[in-house]
Image 1 (cartoon, rainbow, N blue to C red):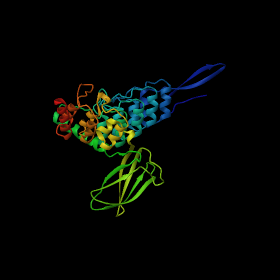
Image 2: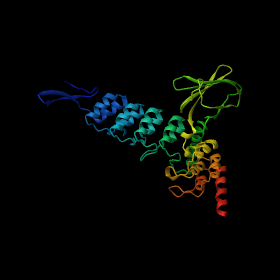
Image 3: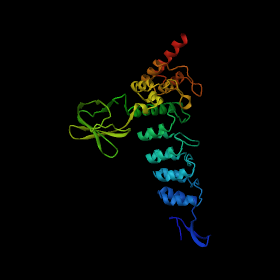
Image 4: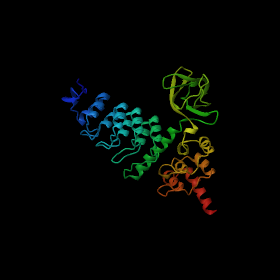
Length: 369
């Protein structure tokens, strides 16, 4: 019997098993063959090559591995197969691009999910020139931002160019845009799951109906509304037309204008108990944060890099959540892993914002007392 691996040259060996002489075809696969198969998404060929003992981390002339190529083309199944063999997931190519970053650049959500699930770093790795989260923010990839933050990507990561003005401007814009994008999430609060939703309305038309549509194109909820520029706001409890509750996911909210035209807004729907106190402090609202604190979450618990929720509120200029945290007893003297306090975060990231004045005033009051 002969076994062959498509796409590779084969050599035939004779193997004695008991009283039988078996002819077995073994692929003369190389690392470059593996890279070609991974890039083309040929999973069976990739698995065959791996079975022959080929080096799965061999690189091409651009310094790109098989998993890098699979990620760049969105072949999530190939990424998973390679990761299962223990390949290096965080290698960068000659241009300083990692597999995670190239997934984000290509808009390949499934590949990014496979890489992160397999243990790839969501942050900038050694030798990399890009921060994956920055790339996702600049591209407006909301779902990828969710995945990276869920994998504990550092929301305050920076890449310094040596020009302080350029660095300050770029990183400030990234933080503002990140907060703005995450503020669009629809967080269902309380026992009734009520959430306030606001959508812009293009003047001078009026809205006649809103629909909530799932990934499969099914209309889960629709409601006749009367609203005009500049915006539509209404409360929703997460219930569908048949009385069931929507599950946390991304949905399309379709606004239907009185002239029959439509505008779609994609939003992530989550429940308050699924939002970490750190995300709530940085990107959330006072109501969401109060609900989290009401569940007994420690107000000064340290997260990544030892940062407290108040530090993140300061960094993202979220004066609304900073007030809630201070009222709940958050310490302005707490320090992170580098010894920085919430006031240091406000001074570094939001020196001209009201959140700096708030934290400074609390610091001064307690110092005087």
